[in-house]
Length: 187
Image (tube, rainbow, N blue to C red):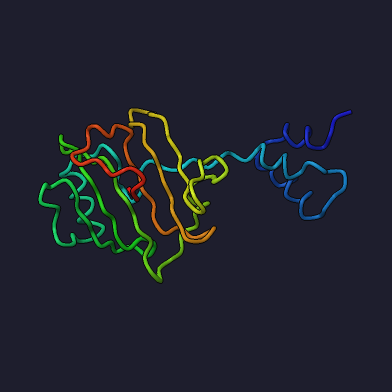
């Protein structure tokens, strides 16, 4: 005998999702696996590799041009020229700190939520169930290289289970960094 969950899986995704949700809302006894069926047909949310037009591997000049369009530099770059911070004109994120490798390519960046700004939910960044959890509210995804884009790590941090405090993206080639982040640091 074919279960309702099996039937739902064969339907077009939008219709199958609607049926599964209706089963959940109505508590239909014939749909005991509606939640499982809904998860099976809903694509996993994988974190993006770039945020606000910033991406690992960008040339320093390109990154600076983009950063100057979305904010303004705060105190210039470090003495070595490998790091800088910009105040952003975004409702969600207040600041971004960036780091460049020895060849002048962006090797990592961290976005920091704007205090009192529009909340960013961690689950909007990626499916938390697919991330490695470290500590209470730190989630880490290692993304493989894809489409000519380098492999990278995406880390979201918070002080509560829902609202993002910071988001970091870093390349997976730490020996290219001008100055390596200390183990267990916020980068």
